[in-house]
Length: 392
Image 1 (cartoon, helix red, strand yellow):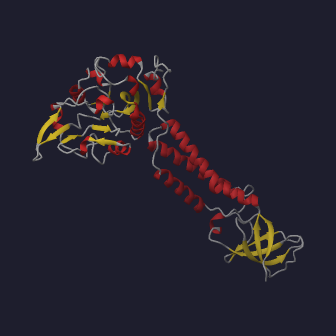
Image 2 (cartoon, one colour; image 1 turned 90 degrees about the vertical axis):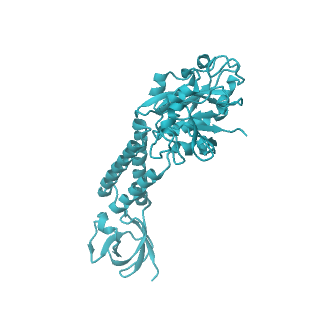
Image 3 (tube, rainbow, N blue to C red; image 1 turned 135 degrees about the horizontal axis):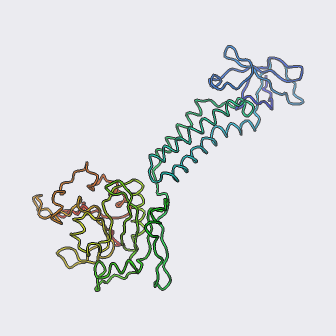
């Protein structure tokens, strides 16, 4: 027999086919359906259920002639489908987004706590959805089950945990005045530290910083125009596990790349002992390395040569140099020289020590992805602390 549609039933989530048992005095059709597995958990249908079957009542469209024994197709009210979508998708999504947002505001960049807050949001969404499922007046038999909702929440949690983290904010850059006479100053340290959503900011080198550099990393014979340089203020995690503020000067062509790298490092809580301008050490590279200071720009030649170093161009940076020394090897593989001499105890590359930079280190991958070269990849000379960028 040809299936005839019945409308305005609010028991089913999707259209189904059943057999008409009888027509009520009010002209409604009582339809008998095979129960689905979901019916065992839904608990919303108030109709009779027995022997794996269930019965429900549906309105008969005007003009339709339907009698007991007919096979019919029962359609759905759109509003019930809308309610089901709200429960299946919107409520868990809202819980997830609220959890992520609250976690970011309270705990950024501590990802474990952020993830925990997101999961708590999902759990609250689960509880809310479960309550709504049981409120038959709000939602009747939308085909939603606890198992389905649990699966959805689990999938959402897995997606959240598998997503690659990305910087929460773009590094902040202020523009100088047209004549470059009074560049905008960076935020004071205390204000910068209190800005939870700013991990790094950079500007053209301000006068106050240039005064600290003159006669040291920026000597009188410096051939680099200050306009080519940018001053970076970064947040970083020290070896003590606490947040500190560091300073770097770099070439304007790599400032944004390095700023993003340090945002990533801060979010992953990568530890760096010190980040000071090398001028704090009177531009003495050995003193800076011995103190395990991470630094970048310094107008100088390569040690033992007349050629300008990449540091002189602001295109190189040395990371945790005490634990990542510059080592020169003989042809037979024996060590010829270690710079500075104080770092000799750390010449061995113990990959289990997170202070050592290796090809498996996060910091190595970040710099390489941004077009830098690692000194640890060189041949006879291994400069494990050193990353440089080539403009060629």
